Length: 181
Image (cartoon, rainbow, N blue to C red; front, side, top):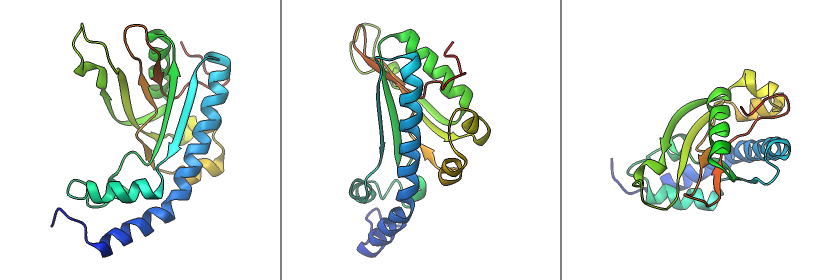
């Protein structure tokens, strides 16, 4: 296999992603609604950000990463993303626990481990998660959203914090009736 995508394969991949894109937009909207509602009661100062990867961004990355990901519609793990900016490390820890209890964690990486003890910088934990249908219904996802999202993965929610006193971000918080602690 060549490390360069052919124009025909590139068009095929873009067409395939266009047909999937609506599901990732629905996933993004559901995460956005859920995260904002949950943060309102638990961390009112939190900043919530969500996104579905645009078709143009997908197309560019499909070319750039073709050698590593020959089937990007299935292989890319960042087609939907979510992030929450929180103030304290204890808030980040609470969000991490919630993610690990309520989502199927496919993969996780602590980016902050790359920094030395005396270094200041970006600290976070990236999660690649899939929605668990049973908890998803109990934490506010509708049946239609669960069906549309299916087994699709998101590279986030992620939990992060800049050190030592900066703002950080963290992934999915609890909905009403789901304590952070």
